[in-house]
Length: 175
Image 1 (cartoon, rainbow, N blue to C red):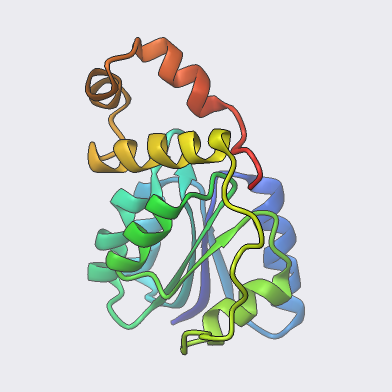
Image 2: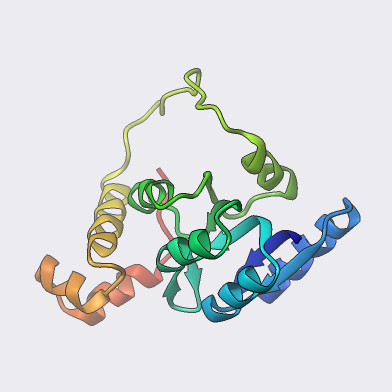
């Protein structure tokens, strides 16, 4: 049994985090693709999985249920550079124990695996979301509703597919 399975197509990030976890005494396996992640989860079921939401154009949300089936006891934390409310909610519904936005430190990742209780003392945002952020959240929600299919999402939003692709390629806007 492996302590951690790191599923991320960013080789540099996986290598760095893997080294940190190895120094802390954990066994670590890495996968850059969904197929590789499933194969490793079946061969050596991990106790914890750190799953990137965007795996070289494929959705980690589609992989999450298969990982849950392959390693039902595993705790899964979704980590993404493209955080949105819609994908966070969907990840939790699909069985993730936490959802983190990149960049996240090794300590924040370890805390995500241990924090089980909701935090009712969490402060509310002081300012409402900007219009750009609300637009980004809406795009992510509609994309999630269409299973990550950009063409179907573009049709639903009545926009050109390439326009949507350009919008999705940008980093999410802050607040």
